[in-house]
Image (cartoon, rainbow, N blue to C red):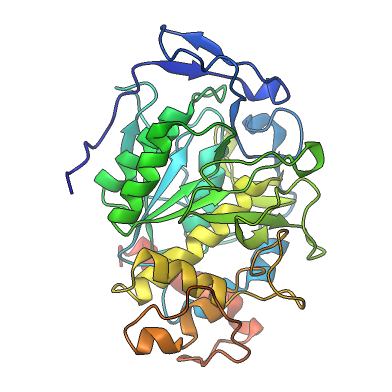
Length: 392
């Protein structure tokens, strides 16, 4: 398989603004791409309605020391004694990742494929920084929020401008750049209702390189529920959003492509372009459900480096908190379970095969490490923060 270039220029830009989510016409600049003008917009899968990715919509949380509901629901600190994602590079194909203190030196600039020569370490939208924070934010003293895989590294690949202009080709180029940059897990919190040939091929290339691609399912379930890509492409782990009540968020896209669900409403993460680069809340959308699953994929890849991408996806789906009636179009195999995803014993892995084409529920995953009780949550945060500060 040929080596993909690290950054891939997108010569013809198809620009849209998230402020016009309901508009089905793309404006062309630079000429070319005949017949695409009637395509539906490409957008960041950020909120249920309206302009989604401007940092101003998020608010500073009133109590930064509080542990967010989504973090409590996922309980991923239970698995930190086993793995925190060290050695895994996760690509955030998004609007860039700002230089937030809780990410420290964990982020590498993977390039700006939308505007070649630009920097992926500038996030005028704030969207990519929120996503990266959910995946890999390091614990910090006095801050309750932390990422799922705080020892993982982040490869920032910028495919959208501050005003959220992008194209399906740019998303595809971003995935290509992620592969070339050595990422083994890719998060795409951007959707397109008309995937380009380049986007389709990029997903195929990811599969050929055994790279896990996790994607947001989109936010228009209550507005016609259009099919969104790359989430609907074969081999991509599509993620739906739930609220604090455990039910599917009304905006969260549905369909047979849904693999699992994760928290995606009233989400707290890292603020970009804000005073002090603190933590912000109020984010909503499958954009923020996807990185919870991406973080779990990083934990799994760190603990099981020999698993293929399809086996990682299988493990996440098989160990999810399954719906009582079985998999459904709203939450797929259920809400992702970080502890079970890492500690469960799957017979087909032990046998060195991929015998099961579809996941089967595991009623009692066999743990390989006893989880700390809830009283040790703060101690875990402090210990991991100290290790990060020491460069461990």
